[in-house]
Amino acid sequence: MMSSLPINLSKVGKEDIDKEIVRVGMIAELDAVSLYEQLAAFTENEGLKKVLLDIAREEKTHIGEFAELLFHFDEEQVKETENGRKEIGELLG
Image (cartoon, rainbow, N blue to C red):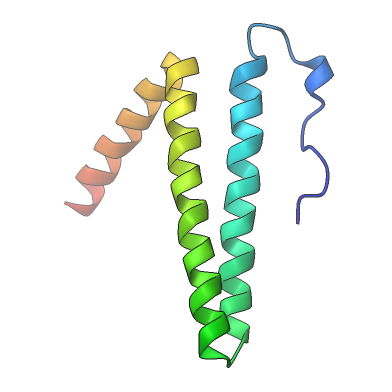
């Protein structure tokens, strides 16, 4: 689990700080999704499993929100994400 920032933000240039803040947020949300889904897989309590998976879904929404923010701050990310979509479309049909 992420308990500290994976990057020293004080060493990031002013022009890149917002992009890096958003990326750190995305990392935290991805970590949370993984944690909640793993915990849900371990429990035999169906109520707890249901709640954990619901929370994981909410974290996935947060990932989408951070992705949209990143697209706002990083035009190259927009372009490369589209390139990735095209490549996957070609590979998977």
